[in-house]
Length: 446
Image (tube, rainbow, N blue to C red; front, side, top):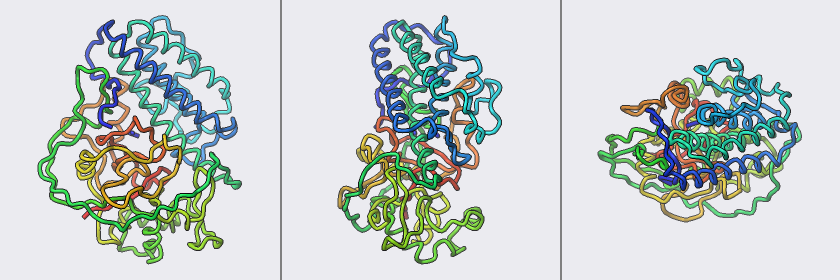
């Protein structure tokens, strides 16, 4: 998963010969502070989990938290230290292939992702030692005179680790949901009684607009992922965009109107999923007559009666469910260009990881465009493909985003477990349209 405008971060490398840049001492200090902060955040995330928790892989899409910690460390060792620290000695030679996720150009990888849960060895203590070993080496590199390309790759690694932090939250949520004890990741209570205002729409004139990120080629503190480039012109017809995300209350109305049994609302593949998977509600909604709605919702803070969450955004729905809901309301999902056009003109603030809620919340205002950032990733009607003129990164890093441009749909906006300095209006996330274990929600357009 491809995850503020310029956040003062270094950029992704664009090829060519790296040059020594001793004048970038200030950038190295800033980058070291950011590196340490992100690595500490991963440590804090894992600290709430036992070694047994970190072994669990509850579905093929997920990975154990122990693996997330190892793979993000592997990334720095493989793409930074092996190339830019001459005296670097790998922590364990087997880790080079053991924690390779999908970079086929680097050689051997574990063929079945679902086997990651069988990695009882190396132990968690060894993974923690691996992280410390690599941290010390990155700090040594940044205390010297690192080449500009090294800085660019470190900042890519920082953003890569933030993506895996978000994945770790979604993966442990699914793991705890499949545990019959339904444990909490975090203690908490639901006291938000904010009532969502009726859904309204903002008219946007459209026309010839520019989307995508304009990366400053000569600024090593600028960053975006390669799939956000190049910035380019596209034409948008006038449209209207909902001023907030669809709430659980509104989605429950769709369910009560037999939305999951009306074939005319569903794309063909979506209808097949409804039948084969037995979908009757969003993921994590469970039947429970003790709540007046008839449902409990599982969250990272444990199970909560749906009646206490009715005005919060519905989440953990697939693109097929989002599309069916939109059709039910005689509306549609926005394209990613429409979404970005709207998001480019509003402050990018919302319920992100730093709020520590770890779940979507009700809109905090009664009017205006809201929730474009945070709460839930928003499904769009756009297939994930390259922009006109798109070029993947050179070498093995070219497998980071470009190779996945098939059979996936774009999501925008971040979620309640996305770090705040990781999101921007141009950020393109992508998943298969049947994906539900992510914090994914619905915004409609017309």
